View (tube, rainbow, N blue to C red):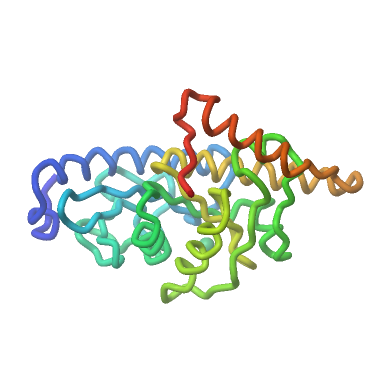
Length: 242
Ligand SMILES: [Zn+2]
């Protein structure tokens, strides 16, 4: 494809990586409807493109395009201020939030946002999902925290995500009255967290209908998390947050 002058200013290795990430991020968007996490054009996946010696870029979904119409070429490239670098369409309206996370959490390589039903139902009530499942301890190392209420339009969503996840082992935050944002080493890892947060939100909700879920002792949560992050999967699930 032809590049605008914006991307042409970058070295060829970066441009090649952008093309690879465009295809990857396009493919990963198909996972969101596949796992029942999105309706219509809601939801978005992004991945960081590291630029040696310069400011990183991100690749994200264009705004308002239906999932069936997404192509690698239609994916939008922005800098970490959220400015358009390459693409024929406007970037997702959540780009500023993704960009803020990449700017302030250098270890994060992928970000996902959905309004998946059960996770968003907890967000609407402003209640964290308590860690009452071993898979939650494995994947998130504790409860799924609630982030502040924030309106779209400035960096307040991004700031709320970063401030909440900085003090948490969780790779997911439920922004109050809004929905989940997840982070990962790369976009695929963040998509996995988006699938898992919906699954645990659904299971704990159902458990609540039956009575009060039993807590897991903090020492057991700690050892489950340590084992899963360090042993299971030969280290490829190493934690993305400190
Ligand atoms: Zn949203």
